[in-house]
Image (tube, rainbow, N blue to C red; front, side, top):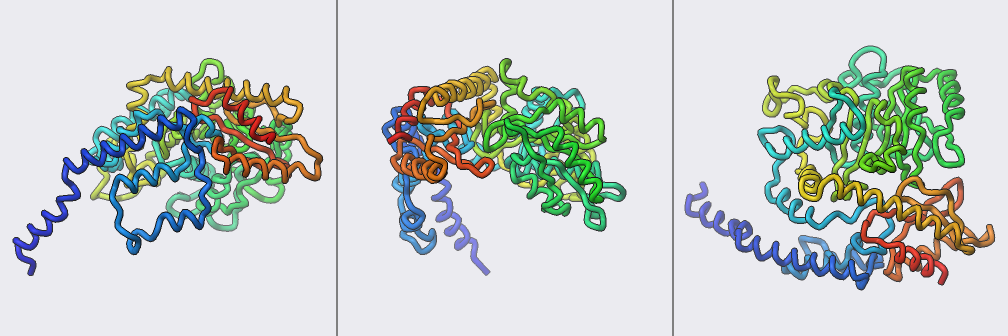
Length: 478
């Protein structure tokens, strides 16, 4: 048996890692490193993307057990230096924002507290904040008193949650969450050909089969073609499938296009289908008096997914899964877990009973504190600025004799390409993108639309200026 003295000795050795003074030194070092990082990014004096090859990365970051032990500050310095600098104004790449720096201390607090937002007992403040934030998001969508939802880790998990509710509402007979939906009957969920792949994945996970996500052609603006939806619906029924619902997109990943949500809502009501809106990217336009019109009809959706870690400029991950009738969540994930759940607690007091996650970090802290300190008006201004900047850049591209604009942007996403002979065009876009990214002043993406390669920028950094984007065009011409 281990002696009390031995246990005390081992406890004291472990305690050194938990020393508050050591934490203070490490936190101060981290703050200094990040302040230097933000200063250099704002001054445009650092690289946006390090350009390190996969082989070099594995060499620089060895196996954590067999590699040499390292001191904290140099290790953290190398981590920041080798990462993509999303606060650099030349970062116009992926759909991840440059969060306001105040979220850094908040995230540190959340990590140290490490409360699991599963039940209100375990994370009193986090669960109360989640209730307030979800109610705020549902109100912005336009839901009434019955509306509500839950926060979860990302749009993919959010879509899975919403389609789980769609399946439960539309699967005839039994209790699909308990009994499964497999069997002779084949189901269909209508999605835009521009819809995010997560919906196909959700159908697969839910036992409907990935092919249950039936792609609907889009029009010239990459929006669901309503005539094509009617024809796809008719054909699907004739094939013996049972339609469950329609997924509308408010801000597609590739182009930022918005489906006609009001028309889709009318169609779903006419045919008794669940209407889900993927507003992961574009939902934040609801904060803008000028751009909220892009989501007209979203208030009629049965469910909505809205990412805070996109155009609410929050760190990853934080997604609102919202329902016009929040009571659906009370049966969707019902389980017997007497060690965790209470029969007398209100639904919102037990988030783990309303989503896939049990252990859930304090993802709500950065958003709630940003709303309380900087205000909704700050986030609305950031959304409007990035949308306005996208339109200004698109105008620059449209006027430039050596570039071609795909279409006028509906959000903060702009697709364009350099003009070239057809035989050389796709290869040219790929080569100039790679060259510009490796140069380090900018970081941009590309996409393939109807078989053709386009350059694609996403304006997720409110510190980016039109002058930066003009410089990008010049870089792409070298």
